[in-house]
Image (cartoon, rainbow over all chains, first blue to last red; front, side, top):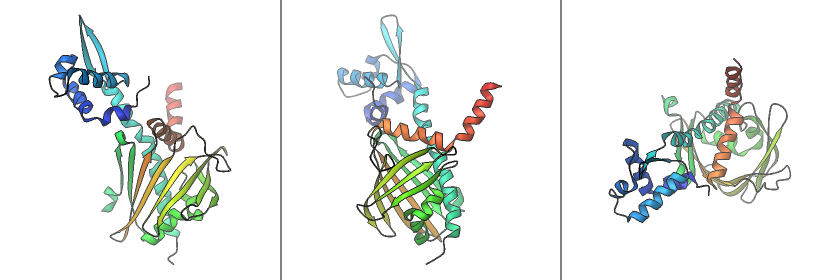
Length: 104
Length: 164
């Protein structure tokens, strides 16, 4: 199932998980200790983040470590850049239009 | 002095909202007309190298603006803007969607809700455009379209780099 990345980062617990993992990779149990929610609830959040590519799994013997995938997060951010360029281009045209509009 | 803070984009990606703010060195009356009259919109709404071409404009609640974005090779992408609420000179609410040349909505794309606010600031006007996208997929499509419409030059340069 394809997860909605914006929905994924909307949740405060999931944002908390991501900021924990920015510093170091962690096991699901270690992550769960930082939150008041049940382990099951935390693993569900982890699963959602992993499904949309914001976390990556690494197998370390019998344990699973989760990493924060900064590349994916940057992709989300960069979507905005072309949008910005379009609006800049529009607005510089609008500046010229406004110079030529006569007052009523 | 305003120049430095003149253009701002704020994003609230989790809620699929983007807010664009821009200061214009012209009276609110002029800026309002530039945003609401087809004659002016056609001169600026298309980001380079595109231009907007109005087919119909009926600026009143329940009315619509039907226009094409015309590309450098003459390609046409149709859009329509349905006006929902208007407070003359101050703000208007609209719903924007892709469509065909008769205004029939293309269901592959979601609608975007707009809330545009015009405020006097110093000797000029501050415009705030609030956009609410329907889905993540739709938001992504629109941002990628920005790439196509506003970034043609960048692509050419990329091609050169790749073939070097």
